[in-house]
Length: 197
Length: 197
Image 1 (tube, rainbow over the protein chains, first blue to last red):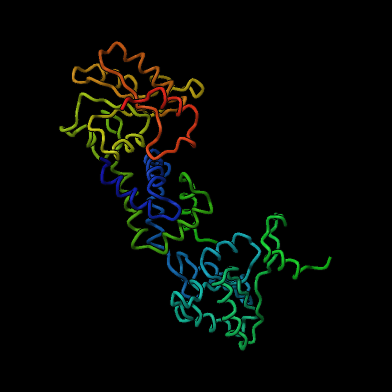
Image 2: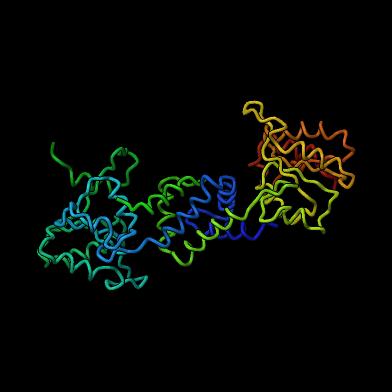
C-alpha cells in the first residue's frame, strides 16, 4: 500500500525514456530523500520549463523566447544554414562550439512507411529560408541512417535550384576510435575520403 | 547555446540515479515534446509529493499522512513486526501482497567504517515497539548483504530478551531461477534448508 502521491509520481517517472517501473521507484525514493536539495528545485524547473519553453518560429529550436537565442543573435553567421532532424542534434552541434551559423530543425525525416511527407516536416520553410540572398551554404547535418540519408537526398534535389552551396558532414573514423572496431561502411567511407598530408 | 530553463532542467535531471548528462538531455527533450500529457503533470506530481510526503513517526515509512496508511490501518496484524532497511524494501514487500503485519524502517544498516551506530538508525524505537505486549514476532527482513546481516545479528542479540519470536526471510532458489546460474552460497543455503515433500 503505497500512498497516492508517491504512486502517481512513480507512474509518471516510469514514462520517461530509459526508466521502467523499478528505476522509477528508485528515482522517486531518491527524490523524496533529497526534498530540499533536489525534489523541490526539480518540480519548479519542470513546471517553469513547461510554461516557458516554446518552438522558435524561425528555426524550430526550443527556447524560452521566439525567435530563439540563436536566431536572435546578431553575431551568428547568417550565410550558413545547418539542417538537423531534431533539437537534440542542434544541442549536440552547439556543444562542440565549432559552428557559428544558424540552424533549421526539420522535426524528423521523410518516411513513406510512416506516411511522413515533405509537408509534415519543416521543409517548405527551409526552402524559403535557403532562397534568401544572405544564405550562401546549406549544411545537411542529418543522421547517417536510412531515414536521414533519404531526407538529405530529397533536400539536395529540392535545394539544387536555389543557388546555394550544399554540403554534408564528413564520414570517417570517429576521433578516439579504433579501426578494428569500426564497421565496414565507415571504414570504406574513411578510405575514400582520405586527406593528403 | 541552450536556454537557461532547459539547461537547469537538464542539470537537475542528471542528478537522478541512473541518469547521466546524455540521458538527462534525452529525458528533457522527451518532456518538452509532451508538455501537456507528461511534463506539466510530472512537475505538479513532484511538487505535490515534495510538499505532502513525510516520514511516519511510528514506523519510518514515507506517506502523505502521519501515522502512515499502514500504521493507521486497523485491519493490519499488530502481532507481526517486519524490520526493513529502507522504504524501498517496504514497498517491495507490500507489492507481494503476502504480508499483512506492520513494519519498522531502520533507515540503513550498522557500519563501523561509515560511523553508523545503533543510535543513528531507528533501533531504540524498534526495541520500544518490540517490547509492547501485542507484538508476538519480529521478522528481520534485512538485505542478504554484509551490512544487512551484521545488523540482523546485532538486532537478534538486542531483541533476545524481549520475549518475542524472531525470524528472518528464507534463503533459497529464487522462484523461476535456474540452479546452474546460482551462486554457491545460495545453493548451499537452499540445500541446507530443504523441505520434505
